[in-house]
Length: 215
Image 1: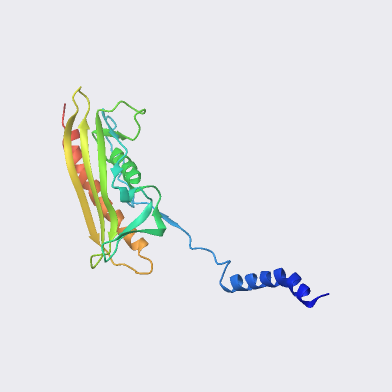
Image 2: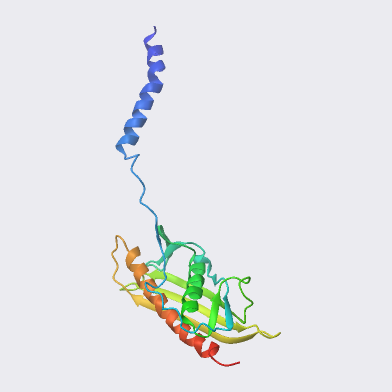
């Protein structure tokens, strides 16, 4: 057999061996890091209210949000002011939905004056709570970095033909936290959870002043 023909016939085998050698040496089978999912609900839920007669019903609508927060990924503001996503760390749901669910759950346990529901079909509502999330991030442009949540809410009285806004307020909470530059997500989540708990407590107080009134 022609030696050149023999060489060409073995070329695919040689190339295959080289490919296996190269990719094997580069850690081809090395697993990717796991994607971590976090919640922002307060660590301890409030005790259920003792007053079981709550004639008023508040429907918590789906919150809207800035375009940057349509993702579940954690959002960081860099030292250069850029907004970036953390590929390996995310929330269990998009933040607008996560916070709306948290509001309904927390206030339904807490409020002595009203039931808080998430869907129209459960009960006819007397009020509708709406929200707009403009910030839910870790701001690393600050030193130390800040965990910041900003949520604007309105409470609408819909018991009459003409809807009346009875509460309109923007809640913002920001907390400085120590950051491990290699793994900033756990520290950021802990600070965001605490910031969210502060907002829930303020919202609870404001809403009770309105819902607790006789009408």
